[in-house]
Image 1: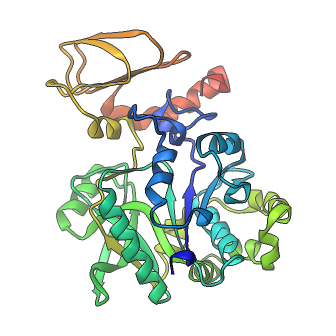
Image 2: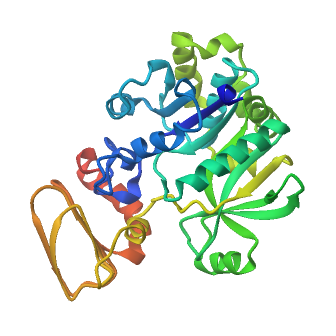
Length: 361
């Protein structure tokens, strides 16, 4: 059965909320944030290698990152790297992966997951995926992994649980998916006990995924509906180069998971973070007695509390009187920003592009 299981690592995001460390040319999935000698992508690959055969591991990324993927995952076969000619959201990526896998194994199941998330409880992660594979292989179902929502977080997507299924008490029907609610709504979600954080990890048989797209997003599905030999070698590259830019940008959550009547969620405490923001990194990192995090740099902090300081190179960062601040310094850019204003970083990056061009983003 394991030979029929595949893993698709989605690795094409730009990671703008981690500017200035995460840049267009080298986004956060290719960065070693924790000083372990492994980037987020490398940590993700190591995490899934116990679950699927090496030949069933697929990395789906933007074509501009092809060399970086090969550099960080040496030895990976070229046919295991799927290159998007242009950025689209996760729905086209998952649909492409489903067709690519089905063309090789009509009975295959797969998990699609991001390259840039942190999983602290790897044993629980492996148990959840094994359970998830067994569930989707037994029937015609789609499955998401949901994490207990321990606090209101406006950066996360939420899954509302419906009725439990008899197969496993931790699996429920998906009632609805809510994307990044405001603070008041996030409070309501957490207090209700009905909502989980959406981990962005999805499982299903390849044919089940394709059928869901055919049913719920027929316009998108029709672009990918060709003979299986289109999903091999240069023919696949040419085909994707032609159709992908014409395909709408849509998250898989709203393409199929929020619409399908065969979509379920498995609740699992994975020690999970999507590491989408500097605040998330601060939460996961060791802190001193004042709650400050110094990320791979030298620093002297006077009367500073609950800050995160990161810098490249050999410089020393000195700060005084800061509370709840991000200080992130690279060779070409310096960010000083309150942690509670970090949602503005995407807009900041856009402003920099307009005023100074792409060299700083």
